Image (cartoon, rainbow, N blue to C red; front, side, top):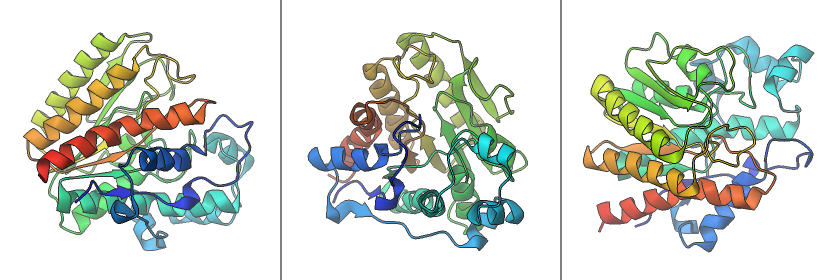
Length: 305
């Protein structure tokens, strides 16, 4: 038995190389994990396309129609940050199902990883910061609606605040949002998560890890969750062009190991999503995203030994 992984070939489609969003990282991440022997046909799951009913539980129907039919206004497109295309629509309608599937697999197996997801800037009725549909909110609300869980913790360690997630779930008492992010970074106007851990610009690895761990423990204490969705964004990395923190590769591994270890120790199922990471060297970026999956794989093997 191996760690369940969720991905889809449509996550990486033909995309302008000049654009700052690294659209090929999803394909490269899967290839990286195949080369490492972590991903195989036996443990890789492919999600389907979301039905409107699933999405309308979290997003405005009119907004969904505008996006799918390419009738968004220019200001909306600018805020989205990605050029509209049929390829974008196809991958956008699959990714939330991927996160939901990873959550369902985690409930059965203890840990599962989605090799995409973490689109936490997507709001109820608009896209923002490369995020169109909020897979974290969709998955959490669906699990609760299905009666699969009673209290979900979304622990978001992406360098940017999960503002869309916080606002969508602001009145959802059985979902607790915790965002560990760089204080002086996008978005300029922060939302209010249930718990916000503001990290100062330029913070080093040790200080970051201390604040992150304290935040995680506080979130667990306050939320008392029976399920965790972990956004393991790697844009905290010291050389990430959109990060503004000074966290090393070893620091990212220590963070992911800490969070996942604690989930196992507390006997709380956890699903991971990859979150943000921006680098022209997309192979190096994929290797960074692979860290959380590597740590999850080690723990999965121990759990199922």
